[in-house]
Image 1 (cartoon, rainbow, N blue to C red):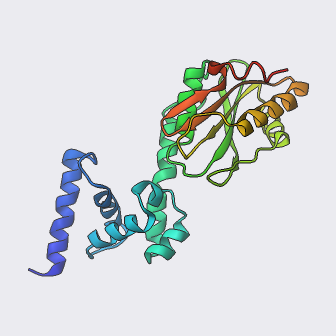
Image 2 (cartoon, rainbow, N blue to C red):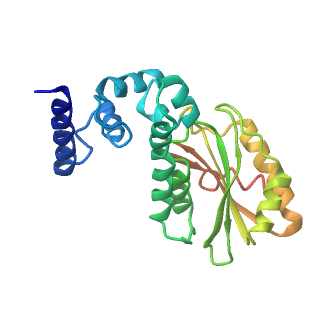
Image 3 (cartoon, rainbow, N blue to C red):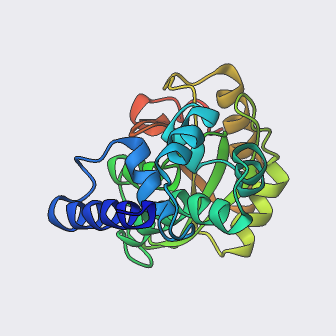
Length: 231
């Protein structure tokens, strides 16, 4: 039997397994291998899938990588790199759309869960401003800054401009801690205070600040941290 027929049989078995079982029983490299079927025809992709995950350390970090880095470091085509890099942002869009076009965010629990969907899989620290109308419906969730792993400088003027642009009646601040800590740092508290002060003259309330770490969150409002910052 030729190598081509062996590979074809393997691919058909993998696809049937996915159709019968879904992805739950697949190992990380098998998931990448399955994706590679659709950009690399008629070649064994098993070794490449192993190598790609090893290069970036984890499946998570591979899926969050810039496609140009995937192309360069894994020595694959740009088409292949783009296919792999599409998974994470597509997942975030899926999670956001499960909420509907303009969900009502009227409690810290809802705000926390909504924020978790915004940061799913992100490996860099990001800062969102969630703009709400007078009925607490989301007008827009704006990504206002994407920083390094350890730092996300947020400028109150940018938050003010974002809130005005999206006609916010109130806003919820949200950022993530990729390192996994849910503790609000002194910098987190300080920037929240500055933003609250900046929003006061334009009569837009900051109703919460959510910190996300993985699938967990901390709410400033729930913890009583916001009361002392709104002067």
